[in-house]
Image (cartoon, rainbow, N blue to C red):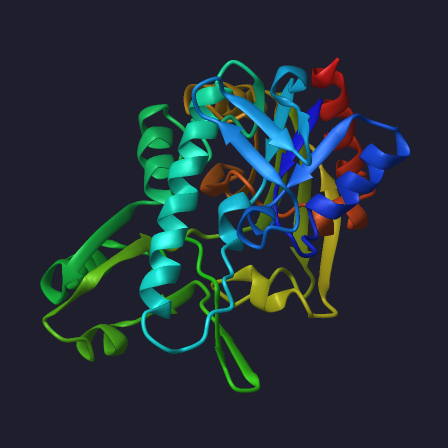
Length: 322
């Protein structure tokens, strides 16, 4: 049996894969946090025996493969604003995280995608361990004071950028939605900062011929070159800001075989059998790894480059179930 741990509501990466599982008549069950919180399904875990019961059926003995995709991101209690709703949400979130840890431990011998040991790998881990593995990454610092930032800025010949350490969600106020993007910063901006601030990630800006988005699946690479017309004269620090441009093109791309081998070995070393990652190809034809997302999106390159990644994920799950 395949167990899908994901969102209750629509998720652009998960639902198309489930369509393929249904098409292939795969033996699977989808479980969400809302199933546990809102009691729509009768769920029981016998901690003494490790058995899992869903609507009166015990499934733990049938589980062979587990697809973990943004399961923990779905804590929505819809409580009122009255006391103690905020603390209750905080407590329930941690209750679910403790339950998830138990599932990791209980089914550690099963096949996971991504592997449960690699699910929480973060941007700083990736940059640190990639550099140790001789994979080229941008020079990066995290600092909380103006003096160190000024020194880093002066030593960076190509300028510097600022970005979140963790993937940032959306800020919603009334009818407006706000999002955080990677941004270039200059000396004027630095001078406007207080002497000390929250520890923040700063990175040397990499000169780019073009950016490459890659989906990795257990040894296979599906790469997309994002080409901006106008002689690649893209001034945005974050290419996502150019996604609506008429001058952007998504081209199927083949990474060098040696680079694929290096990245495959690196992913194995950090317990990842799948992820999405971003690479910049420099004017000197060097590949610079920017970041990795263990549960990144792949719908856009899948559709634009005809990779049909969703069916390939479904086939991987079915193969490992057998």
